[in-house]
Image (cartoon, rainbow, N blue to C red; front, side, top):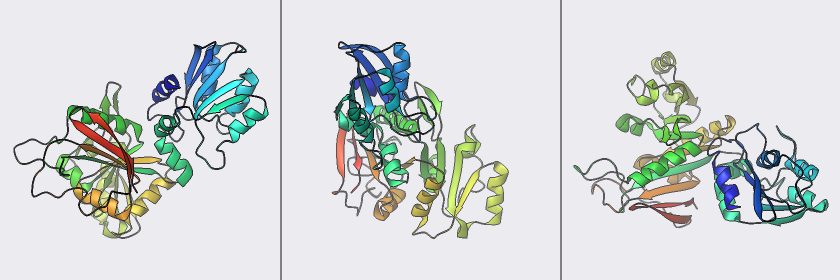
Length: 352
């Protein structure tokens, strides 16, 4: 199952709206075939592993798969049918399909045909792999994850003269891993104007770019043609999101002339984040990573606009006069796990 997880991660961030899934076939305890789901519309992991085997499985063959095999027709036929047709007699499963309409039914069908099914192997790791898919399929809305890089005292800014990078290189690399995972990234207009970010995922695999949202209620970025988000070769992936009631015709004309997409939302300051999330759901955007400054982070936490938190925390102390990102917010209801990245710690988990 650990090898199946490794295989699934080879499609990191490329399978939306589908989950990442890996499969391994063993015979007499030896791996004889492997497969993973590469992207939506292509064969599922189980089928890829069976194709890689290229022959009828032996009587000892065991299929190990990170997610319950599908049992309904979608863009591809049900994997349960492929497993039964191949003659596999033992299936080991990591996580169940999170869809309440499907959960466990694929395994029931296999058992009904005499297949031995073992479930729950590395369940937590297999479920964690598909946080975005799991939320989308059960809630019908995008997983909105808040990403924070702070000092030990919760500040997002270092004292003058100590540089701009709050966290270390290991944390920076991990953020690019997350950017590759999520189909969309969002920043506030303040961050776009102050930091001029690119919001692309850069790593050993090269550069990739999801949808880039600028949350700009009052269209403050209009006319700022020098922003990377408006002028680089991924500019068609940038979407400025603002309130229709604040939209000036001249501003909208400027974005149109620059080829920048605009979402003019119907609502007010209080409903802005909720209406934006609803529009994302309508557009089938399954997850958004919000790289927030203190004001946006506080607003999202207070409004319950974020479901998941990635908090990268360095051992340094911040600018004394700057606000802490979690000031006045109760995070005690969350369930967080911790990992170490160089000198930093990453706290991640669902918000209460």
